[in-house]
Length: 141
Image (tube, rainbow, N blue to C red; front, side, top):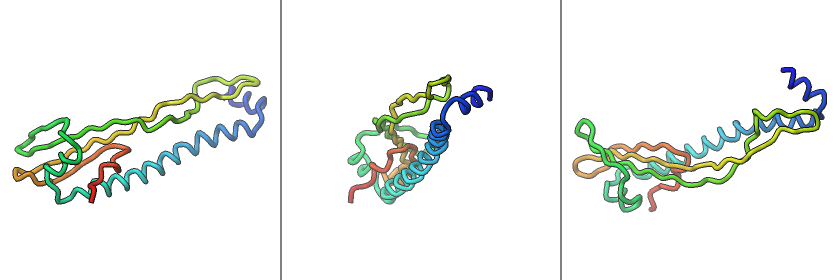
């Protein structure tokens, strides 16, 4: 708290306001992007309803993992990619007189894990997914 009071007294209020805005607005923007990504992913995965295992493997390739659990078969595809670079404020970097809080860059990773529950006849019964880039795996019509 003493450091914050010192910074406010020595730094211009505009600089501190910008830092506070960046810290508060960034999570909001990420949350909104996640909502849009979630809706896109849901539509993409729903496009596979009524499909067969052969259609999934034709589009996504050989599954990374095949499991049987309680008599049901599950096929899992895992995808990882690069999403880009983002600037992140350094929250733990002390800023003294004449100094400004810094930023560092982080590589953002995009991913999509898809698991299909398939019947003995090869029909898709249920599809679950987890990831921030599943929209690209929609069924091509």
